[in-house]
Length: 134
Length: 136
Image 1 (tube, rainbow over the protein chains, first blue to last red):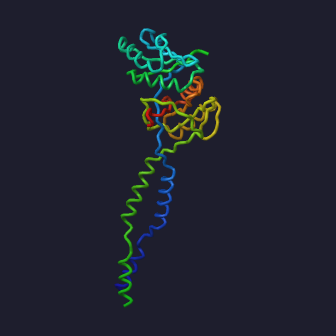
Image 2: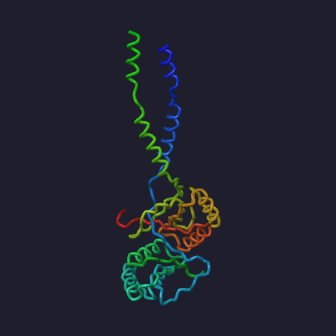
Image 3: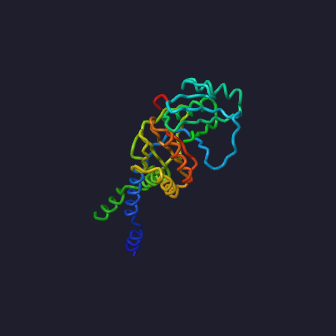
């Protein structure tokens, strides 16, 4: 009788091998598909086409990029390395001003990103992007 | 003698419970961290920037190459298709934001048109990919 009870107890054990198989397959699937690489980038504000209140030009620091890659801050032509200092001095006189980058459609995107980056380094919190009319 | 043999065999069975614990923890970890990024199919030269930072939620990637072609999901797409594809991608993962990988030499006009299309598709969190200055 005792012997029989023991056998019965052994039979009642759940076989977990199929579950283990599935868990391992899921584990391998997720290990393979996981990609930890995150893109590095900068945020860009693009004013939407919806009607917005016009910003007064006196409260805006405008940076223009023309099609040959010439940069001008408030209508003064400057070098890419001088952009930061120029924006800093503009922001010092107008602390609430927002920075708008107005780029020609044919200008290089790399230059645009560098200008936005320099503006951010100079302390502008929100840099908007606008396109010149076609 | 036979009885004794049986007892010994039962004792030599390996206890797999700790291994199972670890496997389950790894499984949960990988499920949580997986974010199915869809590659664009091309690898443009990213511009350099000092203030660039990791885009944690950026898992919709769109690339523009140096001649202004738009690539998404490993194939070339037209600008008009982008809006629909963004809406579709947003349905799959509503929390995601868009990262545009624009080549240094691509025209700004394409980038701005693309941003308009993305915004029309319902995603307002847009960033432009950059490389951290100084080999980051």
